[in-house]
Length: 584
Image 1 (cartoon, rainbow, N blue to C red):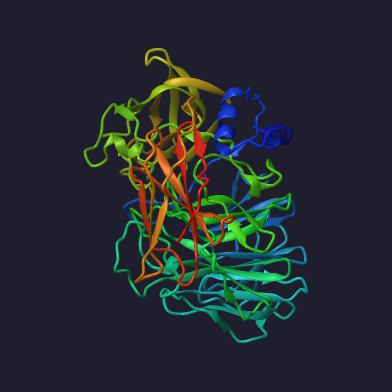
Image 2 (tube, rainbow, N blue to C red):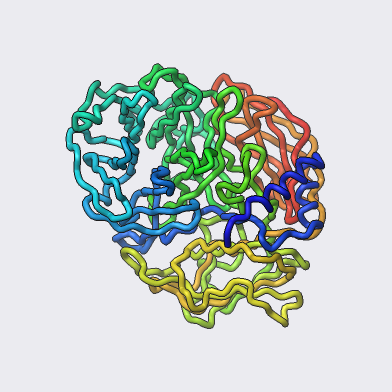
């Protein structure tokens, strides 16, 4: 399906013209006729044929992404991928197997200089090519090797810098290197900043649900990435650990490429500790072909192995006063593709809501350790599994009422897989829907193409109305059982968005200012809540998603920084933004 920019602009312009609040926007999308050529969307985690690794139990991964626009295409390099990827639209990616690169070295970095690409990674030299599609690279420098996660950056004056770091005790470092003399160092490595758990709550190595006392050491400070914007140098870094849901990116800012750097108090700016897929650390900040900023990040599963990870892509921008913002709000719901929305700081969502949260389901068979509810609990770390991978296994969900379905995401769990290395076939299935549970219509047909699509996302050409959905297996690859961590349908429940939450209160922990408790009055028709917060009333860019509770305890604030909080409500028919703001 091709992206149709005019259709998207017409829809978004009508919303802006009417000046509607978010809840009304989502209700409007139900009432108006949605054109067949509606703009393309995507859904995180990104659907790559992630490579199985070389040890059992079988697990997939890709992480530490580095993205560059080169000769009108996007090029993506990621850890443990046995190659790299190219795309013309940042949505459909083609694997390029390579020759000449030590591709198994972790944390790749890439830079264009003078029409050529330059690549490096942890403990690797620097390699170059002027035709990455032909897979030919050659070593040009062994003079500088990064001992930790590297980043290559070229300033406007042509000078080149290498940033590095991956340690629970050491700093993020930087040095100038000479591209005209074999990339030899022009300066010694300089420590730019270290971790500071005592002051920075986002560096606490703990999950969102962990209770105090928290660790006072052990945060991994890693994944540097430099972006220059309006004359300022934004040195981004990751903490506290890639296996944690709280994996995030914070930022230091300077007037010079090697500092001195000052911590941005709104950090972490790239943060997604809750939802279906979590963690947004060790990221690339890049500009699409239209000049808009995006980030591709490492997201965590970390169940079969600490480094079991996925990739996610998020809209990003800078505010008028220089704050960098990464929008993870409902960041694993459908979003418009790059190039559709002109100003992504004003929103990048088609307004399609989740229809399947905790809905009743049945299946052909179920393993005791992986009950059917785990396919509908909005947690990629849990999954339902049938007892076999046979072609007659199925699972069916009841949405409880007639809903409008716009898109589906099927996240396969690979239960019992024995694959090692890259998969040569893929998943075969079909997804049917029904209004009465008797007459069925196929809306996604994958029975014959068997694509290696572990997070298959299908935007329907036209929305359909249905109450029931049934997925039927026709082929399971990798020796796996038919297993799903999330059967997620998006659209509208054809009702009203929930009422606004009231009574929000914030209590900052007097003994540990990194912690706060937020509470509010429950809303009966809400499926969940989103607590938004930030350092100013008009900058509530960070968020936590909350289900089955009207209270949240967080430990990711910064000492000495005042915050503002509000609570949004969500259900299958829309979002109602909080209008009252509490300070804490």
